Image (cartoon, rainbow, N blue to C red; front, top):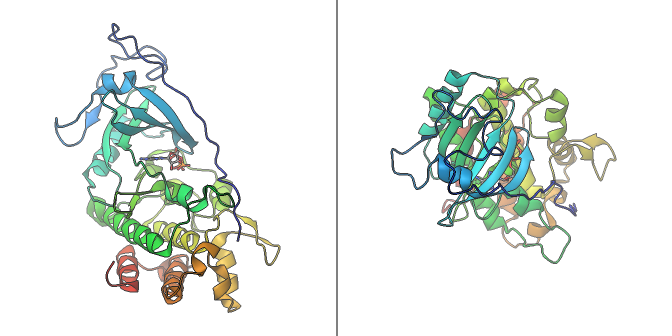
Length: 338
Ligand SMILES: Nc1ncnc2c1ncn2[C@@H]1O[C@H](COP(=O)(O)OP(=O)(O)OP(=O)(O)O)[C@@H](O)[C@H]1O
């Protein structure tokens, strides 16, 4: 299956550099009504006072728009010392300050090597910000689909994909342990999975779904990531997270986009999970794997095992999907050295 283009709108821009003589933040970065002294509106950091920047640094630094997602605009902000963080300016937050803060505090408590760290958050009437670590290697989406069909394409080996899947599964398992085992992610997809320095997958964008306006059902259906029972993204469940994670595994195996497209073989409109279910039912399993990995020798059994795990996760019946802890074990067992 060929994917020829990256397929996401890229925008570039810059925050205005703040006049260093001014003590108030620039208007384009903070509230539009000049109400910067709004009571209680201060940036809250995790990890005590041990942080290398404050709100002023953040607001005065140059920023580049990484993209506009469903939940707002995401910026890479580079500090004077050249360190970078990601700032997500959240739009359509549908909860009040108290609930927002409670959710952020819960997210902040989830610390794991395979979970993108929430460093800080900020709530005011006009601005809601979430500050994360910046991952220099970009997202799994970029790695899988970027530059396909061009000379600039850097192939992603099966070993690399296995490491990404292992790390991401561990990260999601940790997230599901949060809030006494009730925490959900709600938006698992390849653009929310990043790579750490060892090449393991790390899950980003945790826990925002439940505090944001629900995505339209049409958007959910066409993305290919959402479980079929989800009609309101604010009511995502751990089992729907497992479904979405299964879609990511299928994406890793096939190199195909999960969005609903006209399936090459049948000419029908279907999402990735449905297409793979169809192909496997017809016993054409070998045909689904990404051309980029299919020629690697001695790994086909591992790919077939991963395919079975992915298919179990995307089970249409919720009760038949595995728990994420089982998924971690199954993936680790594919190659016991991982
Ligand atoms: N911590 C991060 N480090 C590096 N890149 C990031 C980080 N967070 C997000 N990005 C990248 O920034 C871009 C915009 O992200 P954003 O989350 O706004 O949109 P999205 O992932 O496409 O959709 P959604 O809003 O549904 O998550 C994406 O390409 C994403 O992979």
